[in-house]
Image (cartoon, rainbow, N blue to C red; front, side, top):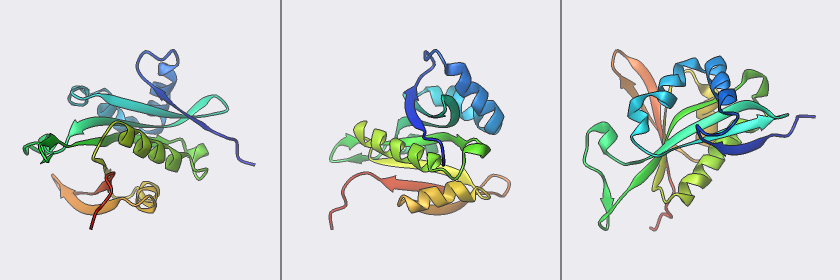
Length: 167
């Protein structure tokens, strides 16, 4: 029997914040710049943590930002309204807590929260080799666009529209 898990929204003032930082540094230290870097403090960001037997076993951090300026383009507008996206900057689940639905639950909670915040879409970038992350996103309906950054760094840009599609 798998232990149950709980997802909570935390910020830097949460009394157990250091437990999230410990999880980040243990599970995915390469993502720390995407959580603490200055460029990601320009927009309101949100942190969802997964707790299992009261331990932090996973997290997802996203920021609500206008669509366009991050890639040096003007902000997209629809009917005069600037569109925003929930851009996922960090996502990881501890190895011993994987294959229990925690990653999928974190992604689903992000989608729900992004809708609540009025975002037009959820966006995420993932390097190649992260098949579990790709599987979660594709199974939730994200579109995928493979791309190459810099010195042949291959990855996939994922987008999930949150607005009803009218044909």
